[in-house]
Amino acid sequence: MTRILLTDYICVAGGDDCGEVDLDIANERFPYGVGKDAVVLSCQVIVFTCRTCGMAWTDHTAETAHEQAVEEYLRKGAGSNR
Ligand SMILES: [Zn+2]
Image 1 (tube, rainbow, N blue to C red):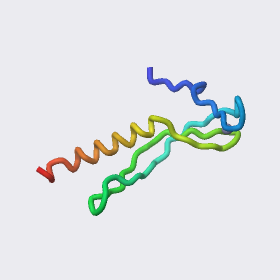
Image 2: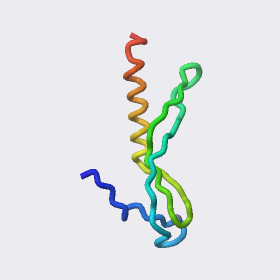
Image 3: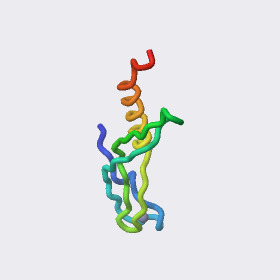
């Protein structure tokens, strides 16, 4: 059910069918919060890379990974403010 259809991820940067796309898992770090409360969270995201033109991008799953990292951070930190 969670199978990723590669045909959904065809690069079109260099034309109609630029080429096949590689999927990679990358560790991404991103800032969360402001001021002295700011932290750097990390999560794993799926990076798509075109074999032909080399363009790399992420999709909505990266946003989900970000949200999960934030949730996890908040869950660990919960209690210190109560
Ligand atoms: Zn391409």
